[in-house]
Amino acid sequence: MEIVNPAQAAVCCVFDSDDCHGEYLNMDSQGTSIIYHADCVGRENCVGFARQASTMDIKYLTCSPSFTYPDQTNYMFMDYFCISGARVGTMSSANIQSSTDMIYLRGQDYTTSGIAVTSASCSVESDDCNVIISVYALDLRLANDSTGACTQELSLSGTVFDCSDDNNFKINEIFQSSNNYINVNLSSTVTNEGYFWIGFNS
Image 1 (tube, one colour):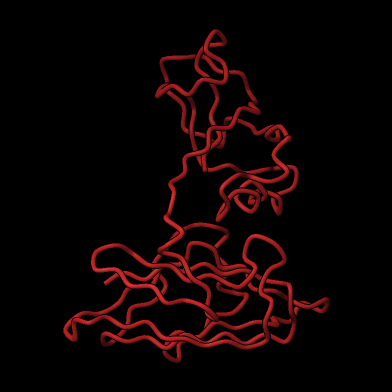
Image 2 (cartoon, helix red, strand yellow):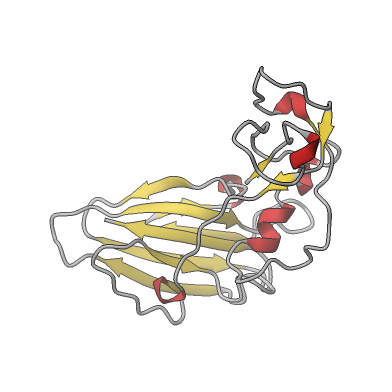
């Protein structure tokens, strides 16, 4: 997701390649920098989106030297891609097959209340015995309790991910299998908190 600053007032709120660009960062409240992601990721339509983008200093953005820009902007351009629902499952109901595309697994009630179970497990397997499976985190926001202790863990064939591994919606590879099979296990001491969405590719 990027926040951009229009190069010319006449084309305000229309994205142009000369606009300033960069990752959105709310300097007044850095904890809310992911609020637009949380409102939109995994949904057909963004929720709660009657809000204006918070003001951001352009010194945190990359700008063209050919133009003069205001010091701050509240114009946001969101770059996104769509994933077919047929390629996305939850641990309790996933039965997805694909020969070429990445497949995805996310927590139950991902777009509403968060992870709704205290434990779940499933497996991901490739028909080709000679491949490894790469796992990507699209969203990993596991829940802490009121004391700050992590209450949830996601395990991929024994490699454990907890709250310290949260990715703030920055998509990155988090695991590679040693063979064509991955066991996925979720454990939680709370319900209706925490979120995960991971992708598998071989």
